[in-house]
Image (cartoon, rainbow, N blue to C red; front, side, top):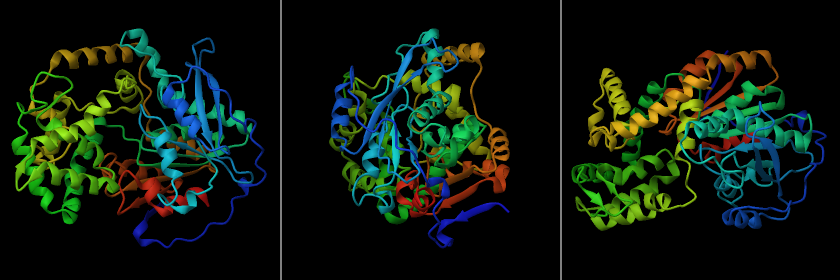
Length: 463
């Protein structure tokens, strides 16, 4: 029988201690290593780590099939409690470091107390944070190298960390968002290194347009739940749509960076999947729209404190790396005008009217004519990459084969009813195909944030 749970309907019970936790070896690198050639932000972060936090690097090849390829330094850190089976946490992204998740899970009172003093390791995925950075540029040679920075390379790096610290002892892995995609890859690529694997807020979907269409549709479903808490915000979003016409730009000059039309509120779309951010979103909508009138100064202030701050970050040189990973590894759709037209067309076949949606990734793109030069250049480069090397996409059948061949490997899959980044609508095919090979839980009141807001996940992972 398929193990499917609606968490609002189940009773929570303590689990017995897993015998796999007994007799864990002392880690081989318990003391800090001297960091060299490290960016200042990383030096600051490393210096902030408590003395009982293990921190080190492991050297790996950029291309795991070619030991002579450039050497990368992968930074890892965390607490290793003797007698407790270690857990590797794989953060979201791609193109993000792990430091925010580390701070969150180690903040007293911020998350479930079960996370306190847990034996959890973190690492900065290749290309990010205190690990070696991405190759820069967009030549065919650079893009060919960037294909090594997706989930296959990340899993191989994680295995190098495990073997360095614990030899042949398998461990547990939890991945959130893109980390959930990595967790799926791990269960397929290196199941022998795992006892349990947990994927929160990601799932294998093989039709990229269907995945993106569900993502956009889900925002309208979840917005109705949001409006139950903040009914006045429906009028605020409607007023912003009316005011933010294509020629309306912030700042109102040729200065860069600037945002025009509905792109001015795109950051609301990006943060909406996280239910704890709903209060933040309501506060900004209340500031930007007063008595039905859009306050341009408040909109510009919103952009300065969100979008422009990120654009001005000189270290944020990851666009091509993320594009390659999205295309070559994740099989994700780009929200450009041609793709959005296809997505909107597919939604119309469902009886939807997407042109009236108040919040989604396509709303700003659809305000403007397509920019074929820029899109065609990107697509041509990625098509040459695929012609030369193919792609590295996952399929549900791959995971089914691995779990069937490794019956001792426990796989947990988590979705959130209020998640609009990887919505519950995308989970059906994998859940149906895998049946009782997995434990699936859909949380009724959480979004993309369930890894720290849901007690049941802490129970599954840490008990």
